[in-house]
Structures are given as C-alpha cells and as structure tokens.
Length: 81
Length: 144
Image 1: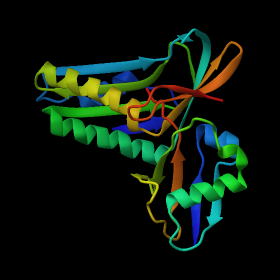
Image 2 (image 1 turned 90 degrees about the horizontal axis):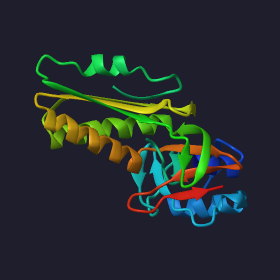
Image 3 (image 1 turned 90 degrees about the vertical axis):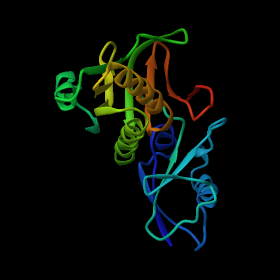
C-alpha cells in the first residue's frame, strides 16, 4: 500500500521535504512507518524528540494500522499561542 | 470562527463575530510575540501549522469549551508565517451571558492551544534559531 506523509517544522527541515509518498507492506502501523522513514531520512532521528501521530488529521497511537492512501503526520512538540 | 491565517489578525472581526444579543460579556485574549525567551533576545517568530488539522483542533477546543461553560460564541484565529515582535500571534474572543464563563473559557482555550494544536514556532534570536515546543505534560524543548 502507499501512504502520504507530510512533514512540518523541524521534521520538514530534517527531511528536506514537505510531503512524500511511501510504499509499505500491508498491515504496517504508524510506528513501522516511522522506523522505515528513519532509514530513508536518517536526519529525522532528532535526539530527545517526542512525537505524536496523526492519521487523516486525527491523533492516533503508534500501533494504529495504516490503510491505503492514509495521510500521516508525525507531530513534533507543538508551540502555538 | 476557528482558523489559521497568514494575514495580521483583526480583533474587531472576532469581536463582531462573537457579539450576541444574549451576551453580557465579551472577553478578548491577544497573545503577542515577546522580545525575550529564556534569556535569548528574540528578533522574530515564524509560525507553521498543519493547517487542516490545526483548524479542526481549534474547533474541537470551541466545542469542549461549550460543554464546560455556558458561553454564547467563541472565535479563535492563529497567525502563521513571520510575526514581528509585539504583533498578535493568536486572538481568542468569547461571549457569554455572565462574565465568569467567558473568562474561564478563554483561559481554557489558550492553555489547550498550547497543548494539542499542530502549530509550531521557530524562534529567531540573536545568534541562532530554534524550534520551540511542548507535548502534553512534558517540559518545553528547544530543538535545532
């Protein structure tokens, strides 16, 4: 399956991309995707960072199973306000 | 009205939006950019959002506030892009029949914005730049 990944803030800078497509084996979770992406973009592994995960604009856990065409965003610590 | 914008935020637009014949109070909150943070001389702030989800989360905050307090209307607009020192980065306006509810809901909204809404700011200071952030219950981090 293919999912769409959007990068923001520090992760966008580290990946050098705002949006990518990623091919994954069926049944992959958000956590699996993050491990795969760190192989493709080694600089994504920011030391000490804690991430939240969003699929199709809703917060999910790392064990959330992905489906074809999902939009996935890894959310670094937020700082609105 | 729950949105993010690259334009300067118009306070009077939000106040008009929450104006309600049932309301006896309107509380505006303006978050502005400060020229210092943790000992750094801040030159400017640059805000970025996951816009679709940020607006959805802002609307969720509005719904939660309505469940907690008897408010009439709420509006939240958050600025994106470069924001100069002293300018508004976020404005919240709340109306309610009696002032307690509007004050409480406004306070709740700004605290929630800082916890759950996918908006990030990069602090440009004398000598460098850094992404600031917190995550639910976690201390502030500064990442390069």
